Picture 1 (cartoon, each protein chain N blue to C red):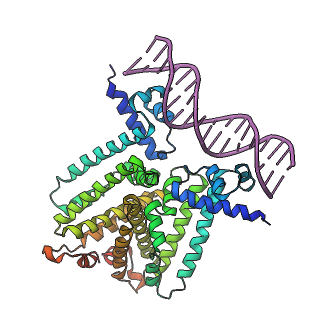
Picture 2 (picture 1 turned 120 degrees about the vertical axis):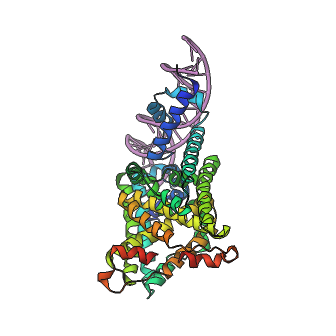
Length: 206
Length: 206
DNA sequence: GTCTATATACAGATAGAC
DNA sequence: GTCTATCTGTATATAGAC
């Protein structure tokens, strides 16, 4: 007995995969419907427009990240959380080499178009930066320094994904994540909050 | 007296701007023709397919990079070359915040589609990595270490562009490029080639 | 709630007069 | 070389029977 949510979820999951693989603009509703095994005309019962599907997909990515980050929060050491965030399964490595980062790709693609999709995708990346900043604060950095370190951390990861995708080589992720971890390891957290100014940050990074 | 190359160049330049602004897939031939002030039907005299326009656009980007990197090679110090590569004009800062990195965006978008466009875009990024690796070699790093440092350098820059674009804030480029420069400054080049192994690299980065 | 048939719009690409 | 008119395919979206 297929409930209402049944097909809806199937559509979202199919869309999530296809959009990651081909990008939002090249992913047609007909293709999504086919993969979800739902007749094309029926799609519009669940989603008013294609953009609405995009929104649902990003929401689902957000839920997935919320769950993942929540699990990472069980780790006691902030540094270990930042390390674990970069632990990818072989499947994830392969997917990234083939299709890049799902979130980064969306931000890149829909960021140019504006609209609610761009805002939603940006908020998702923003939340990941915020979570990272929390970890750096936990390491003893002042809020502002922690934020800048978090931006650098996420930028490095996104750049790593882009190069891995561009050159279709999972080893790039492997090697680059080692470099990022080495950078993290040598960071000198400043316990005295009043000292962790912006000028200190670049020294800390260096 | 409009020569053959006249319209062709206008089409390429219009395509270059529009593809950067809207992405390849959303940029229509009609739009390109309109911006270049060329009748739609005439476009096919100069380019057999839309993909051919894409190829010409990437070629032009490549020429632009070749020229830019050649100019940077006039700077005597490799470290100063790496610094200068990150010196952006206010216009460039604004463009990046609005539309992201033209090359990174192309790699992301067409990388998923395969074909000659993906290869060409990847080669362009590859050449920039190679140039960067040359500078790190000039700083005294062994070839392998220099290559990894170059990957990290370009990844950081690409991540910076993505975040700047996603959050539509040129200040992110400003702040992040400072962080990258600070990282460059504290690198410890190893003069003895035999010592600059891969294990050393992470220490050098740290 | 479901699904077929179709409207509408516009994309890339071509034909052929000039 | 140039440009108008148009072909063809396909995308999003809707109508309406069941």
